[in-house]
Length: 44
Image (cartoon, rainbow, N blue to C red; front, side):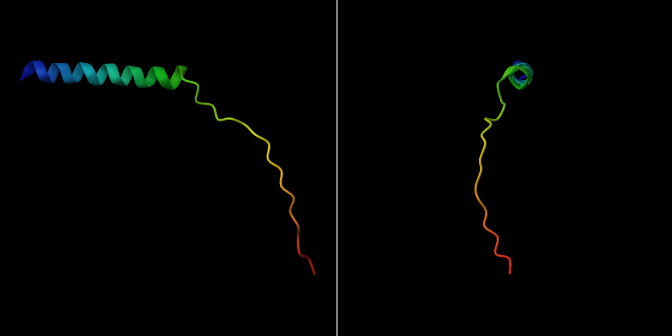
């Protein structure tokens, strides 16, 4: 039982390190795009 718990803790630590590394090194910037749309105002 101790081996399973130890292995699970090690996997959790490796997963956390991978998640932090991806957050810092991964390219997660949004793509920018200019959008223009004409607007007609109904003013009386």
